[in-house]
Image (tube, rainbow, N blue to C red; front, side, top):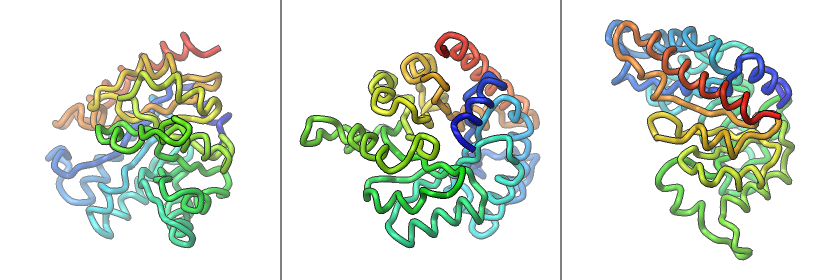
Length: 272
């Protein structure tokens, strides 16, 4: 799918919400049982409760890899269960060179049928290019992340005085069009979104850090939105762990509805 399809979903659902599917077995409600089968039931219930409220789902692959071979099957089945009416993001943060990156790309785009994959770009162009060129698939590059340690390297000034994240975003746009390239930009840096949008006027941003990490949705929308929205705001723990009992899916829906209402207001305020 391209930017126009994403924007169409955003307008129809009045939402730019991405739900992170990060199922920690420690927090799976007891009535679902244990093991990979319980994780899959948990994911199904969350998806069923939020389908009409979001435009994307983002399973973080670490939570599935930790379960071994059965976890990979849960990931595959979860992506299949999501279907074709949402963007399916494999949050894998892969990055290597040559054939290795090509195999990572084939894993997520062909074997698992994800629509997008997060990629760590700091090995340079030859670590990113193998992920590009898959029809209607997206590469989402880590640019300015939401974690506290993002300040360790991403703000480092370069020869021209620009921070490293700015140089990365400018350089990456010479590798791919905005119909195949997004950037991860953390909501915990709301003061940076005006600059980030100037650096990449047409690209979608995947924005983590809302909810449990305390990011400011209003500031992100005010400074980060473009004329086709250009934002996919992710919430993981704040939605999927909103409840821990047998009504966990209903609680997840309530949390997602709250964010969607804020997004609907932002769309009405900031879209042309």
